[in-house]
Each structure stands twice: as structure tokens, then as C-alpha cells.
Image 1 (spheres, one colour):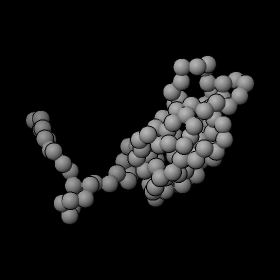
Image 2: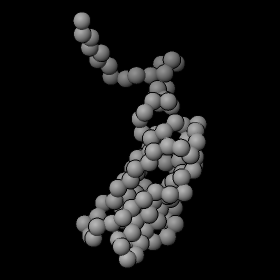
Image 3: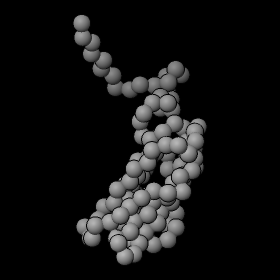
Image 4: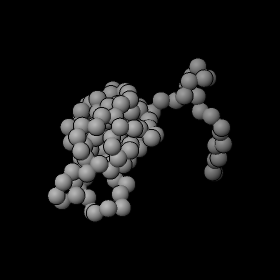
Length: 119
């Protein structure tokens, strides 16, 4: 027998708060940042963005991760040369992205996605 569940809103027990995803495998943070690393164009669970240097951006989470063992992916929006990109300085409170084109670091708009357990 099959079932169908149609809902408009799922709320917490009090009937008004949203349901928090804390242990499910869903994105716990995401962001779309500008090339200069100075503007967050859209985000979830990201409190700040820091331009750490040319081609280097650091985001801080609004709510920390449970530990520094989580998965982060990011991609660059660029029409220029092929880029090498990676994340480092992984912490419970944030993470850093770097973009390198083979000869120098370059500022590029970045899309972030973080999956793991919140504290």
C-alpha cells in the first residue's frame, strides 16, 4: 500500500518554530560570495565573510559544527582560465577557500556547501 503526504508547512512541537535539521545529512551551511570576498549574495548558517587575501575567502558559521570532521565543497564561478581550488583551515566555526590559476591566486565568486553535524 502506498501513501502520500501533502503538507504546506512542517513546524516544531510548539507549532510555530521551523524544524531544525541537526543530525540529518543535509547542508548545514551554504553561501554564494562575490569575487572580492566582501559580499555574501545568499547564505544559510553563514554569519560573516572575510577577504583573507587575493583568491582567499573565509566564512564563519552562525552555528558551529560539532567537530572539524565534516565535508565541504565549493566551486568557482569563472569564465577565465582553469582554476585549482581547495578548502583549508577547517574549523568548527568556519572554513577557508583558495583559488589558484596555476601562476597566481585570483578573486572569483564562490559557491559553498557544508555537510556535517551541528554542535
